[in-house]
Image (cartoon, rainbow, N blue to C red; front, side):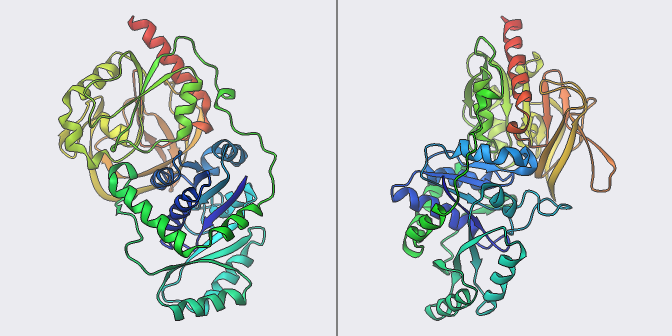
Length: 454
């Protein structure tokens, strides 16, 4: 698989602009492009998917283990001509307290992929040479294969920057002019999701494609990606991870603009485990899909749609009835808020005995979690690494039966989440490829639940 990683010295350099535009431009030129994002980000893959016409996927060694990254990459890039992997933060920024675990550089090495380095050139001239020299020399096993200069102010500015790149022997593969129009809308947790932005998201991706086509040498990009060595890695296979249950229980998965924070591998594992997956949009649908035996509520931005979610009283009541019946319900972050009594003062489903509200505090970071007790997802003591990312808070951080225990930054024990009957609800985002047995257990519980209600 021809492949490259789009990296940068720091966040805000233009990685998403270049990566999304590159995916769209290559697709326009006839390439079948596989898009990926390093880390637990859900928003960028939405734009990648829009640009590529296929799901954007995540590669996160912290959450799934580094041994799974090449296999997940092979799975996600099957049938494609080229893969574009957008990095996270700065090139060497990984999990805090580690030597770059989960960083863009870490993933680039796991994939043996060359790096296309995006530099925000505002306020720089010849000093760019020192910056590039430092990044290239810091870890010589990470191969910087070329540079895209972003936010270039003039032809003279470009000339000086190209000379600086030449000093350190790095080829310039593209030069994007300073243009405020080349951006995607943002909010408190990053970009506005592609699903929420609708037609404007399509227009934004089209504009990025046009800019990259005009200002980036696509032939040189392809040549760089083609220099990645071959890797004989078996592709990850969801059917090899779980045993299917008979009867094809219906598992409803919340989607639409309010619930976009999910991994493509989750639905693939649900289906491999024997489930019939049906998407339900809590903003529009007033009923759960016929025969629903279990419900998955992924994260997203329900706080941006609280009034509309609350106004859909028939679906809120249906979700509450399903949970009260003991049917399996798996909710993460935004899904947890939807199950609360209220969100920012308006009624939600009332399944979880707590109220949610927006705050000014950002909660962000990986968590090494231990299951506090048995649930529809696993047994007590099961371990997983997940990720928190929210600006909301609940009036009660956990119920009588918490979902997880972990150690905080101060090493104090933390109890978090709610296990109520068949409900497992938590702020913690998890990657199902790291614990496929949890998906299999959930679908088995759905099959049992459906048989019990017949």
